[in-house]
Image (cartoon, rainbow, N blue to C red; front, side):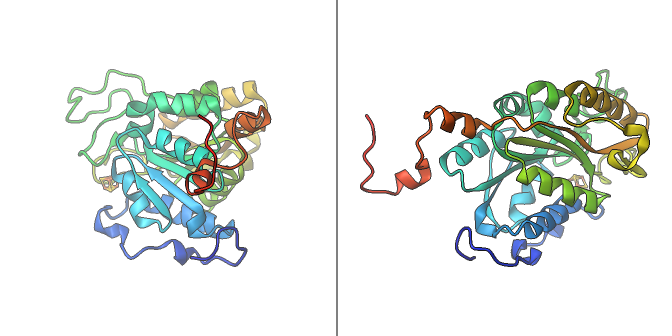
Length: 298
Ligand code: SF4
């Protein structure tokens, strides 16, 4: 690793540790697409591996922090966001990325998702959405379609799935996008935008699970809404974005995959708000902690 902030050309292989994802991810899993896009995005943004913290939840997606060479924290189920928030507040220089599955983020950690979005903490949150719990052998998850049969719902799910984009917008995320593992170039560009965004950037990342969700779509063909005249709307307009999201979420379960940027606003992040009121000291906690001469207020 080089010094933090040092500008140099980064090769994406620097984000490859000694362990290979084939160790635990099945052939054809969409998780490979997330890993590839994330490595490419960080390299193109010129990030050093030691400038990045990747916090993951539990699930097949949680292994992402083992296969990505940066600071990493494999946290507990549904709790990647509180860990990521604390790390970002303690050390604002870190580029913080949190990641987990749809069960982890929209179910078990749904409360953290809502409030991290509302408070607009500056980080990127990638949710691997494969419409089931993969690691634990394919149980119904919050994004499983109504009628989906699994060991936990053998007669078919009686529940409507959550609408992750709409949920994110109404909670207060300041950047909301959807991409798919089968479209690595778009995914990389969206991750780059999310990382550069000052505030909570949520990416609903469609990741096929060929092992346990065999009947599910592979998310092809897909449409990039920014490339299709049918979807001419203003991503900075909350109402227009809400309509576009609702449409995309409904059509997903009808077999049509709409991806792209859905919403963006540039309101100050949580840290920016706190710094503007003087509530957050200029010297980050991470620096004060290791400064023997720092005089703590009691
Ligand atoms: Fe991927 Fe599904 Fe295999 Fe997990 S079980 S690694 S989500 S294909």
